[in-house]
Amino acid sequence: MHDMLVKLYALPSLEQALASVATQGIVVKRAIAPERAMVIAWVRDSFPTSAAEVETAFAQVPAACFIALHDARIVGFACHDVTARNFFGPEGVDASMRGKGIGRALLLSALHAQRVAGYAYAIIGGVGPAAFYEKCVGATSIEGSTPGIYAAAR
Image (cartoon, rainbow, N blue to C red; front, top):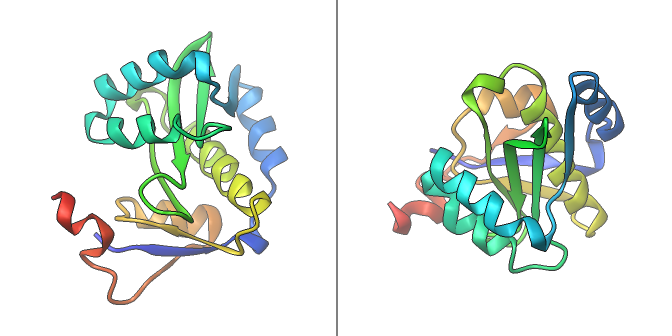
């Protein structure tokens, strides 16, 4: 899996993405410390290979993790700056909730947070759904990035 680069200074509107999911009763927000155990447990059950990175996201203040909630139930998450500074990921959305714009809203929440932190670009490491990132934020492949930073973890 390769890495991708995103221009943070050319991101789509976060407000529109959040408003779109809100019409479906979905709230996307930055996770806070009291939610740590609940979020990590959900990720461990739903996306076990991402649990360690989510734990690392909660070691930062504010937490470098955004969550999507539907009827007070976690349905997705996205982190940034956990495996390496300026990296986006991991991200995951409950299979039953995909196709509703949740992944896009989570992605944009994290990338806008990185932009506010002063980054001009972000790296999406070890990309799975490249077409999703290309479509949502204009991400481009980084030539020669395979196997990338995750090589030692595999």
